[in-house]
Amino acid sequence: MSKIDNTQDAGILPSVLLIDDSPEILEQMKWGLKHRYTIFEADNREAAVGILQREKMALITLDLGLPPDADGVSEGLSALKQFIEVNPLVKVVVITGNQDRANALKAIQFGAYDFMEKPVDLEVFKTVLRRAEYLSGLEKENQTLLEREGKRGFPDIIGTSAVMAKVFDTIRRVAVSDISVLIVGASGTGKELVARAIHQQSHRKDGPFVAINCGAIPEMLLESELFGHEKGAFTGAHIQRPGRIELAEGGTLFLDEIGEIPPALQVKLLRVLQERTIERVGGRVEIPVDIRVLAATNSDLQMAMKEGRFREDLYYRLNTVTISVPPLRDRGTDIVMLAKVLLQRFTEEAKKKISGFSREALLALEQYHWPGNVRELENRIRRAVTLTDNLRIAPEDLDLEEPKDVQAGPTLKEARDVVEKRIIEQTLNKTGGNITKAATILSVSRPTLHDLISRHAIKK
Image (tube, rainbow, N blue to C red; front, side, top):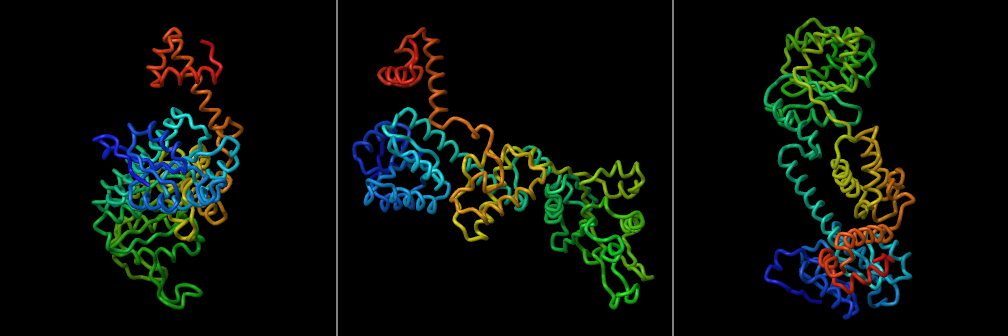
């Protein structure tokens, strides 16, 4: 094994580890990559793992036929699994024989990023590595953004999209005061997480955060849950019991699904907001309370007011500021970021070795409509982690359809060939068929361009 220092600027070049037991193939790949990468090389699994453990490595090329199974693939596949255990984010491009497509696809299932068939076309090979390098950079950016968000005080809310940036900004602004906040959004969008973030950023953060779902408790019990009761107030009230409002003393009371609260309790709740006192059920004594009230709803309270189901004065007491939590489908790249965070969390809980999502799964996540929002995403990933035997989560593990541009689509090699042929034809048209000029524009040699023209049957 060795490291190839190729330029004075090698320290700032991305690194690639080339693994092959053929010195000739290694020399060919080193020659083609030396100007763009700091190159490490190994001819067996043990040496490769040692390099990966010592060096910051984002890219690996791997020949599956490694000793002691140079004529098979068992050692190469075992090496692939070990690489991903050492660094789950590493991108491995597998090199296979022409007739070995089945094992190449198996390598993809085991976590490889892509595969190339022998003999390797250096120009296509460079393109694949650049794409893997780009994806690796995006994943590192995601990690940095997640760490930054945690330091900003929102460790439980993941997101870097513009719509979530607006939510974070409003949380910071309202957290410093005691004003009431109404949090609106569809079911499963994370309204309680927003409420908790407001509490954690406020001067009440050392006090209790008490949440109650007003739609999940029967009407006859809700009053007692909120206000508490005195001993003997009703059948079964054997002891005095404080309610959720009292339990939130010095902290924050979060009223989820506030639109479900019955009209009679709306009057009592309005009094709490106005006078900051309560009376327990069956009691006569006014009890002062020091709380902040946050409320949330997934229903249209303005329509409820028009229909007489929700008091207008209570609405304006609760709605000093409104925070709208966007549906997951409107959060762009947050979907994949959230999915990766949840996958890591659930795999740690389940003590399973899952390295990530397949490319098809990531596309399926992005294309799905997510009617159940973040809660549905959590449930699908938890289910996938529990049931899958794959090293990478596939669309079927998530119970999602194959993404549209993968389903019944061309193979990766076929797609590359289509793009390559089109670019060559366009360049030849621009240069009037001048091979030398076209080769210069495409950054390939004249012999390579002649070979590509012949391979794609392009008319000169």
